Image (cartoon, rainbow, N blue to C red):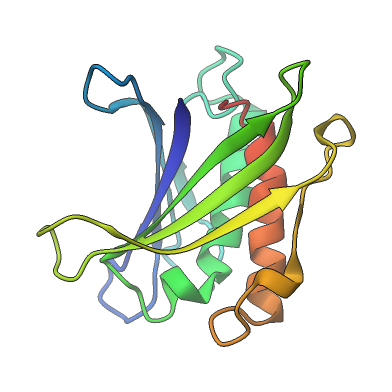
Length: 177
């Protein structure tokens, strides 16, 4: 199984997330999870938009840090920076894992899962699953939609909902399944 782990940090100590780290992970039941590739995006101007990035091969086309890779990372990271659950104020003990949870018979994704995790203390103990959301739809059309009725309104406002939807749509373009 492959999944994407998203972690944000407040490197500038201004109580606002400014660094988005993406870890493209692969799970083998007999081995520890493996980091296959990583990417980092940084907002140095504190405007909530990516200024610098360390890209790598985001879309899996074997072209390292091509224009499409940079655009995908920028678009995805800008959405992550808008997500208040991770970003405002920066929550160093939180992460999101995104993965395809169900495929159709032609191996096209039909469900994408977003699992929200939190640790009680930094770098200590296991992560605790706080919330799980599912986006469903026809991947052939490129449309996966989160069920907005399932989004807790006390955690996610309209900006968060839009950011989550953009994250799901962009994740499909990563070809990390």
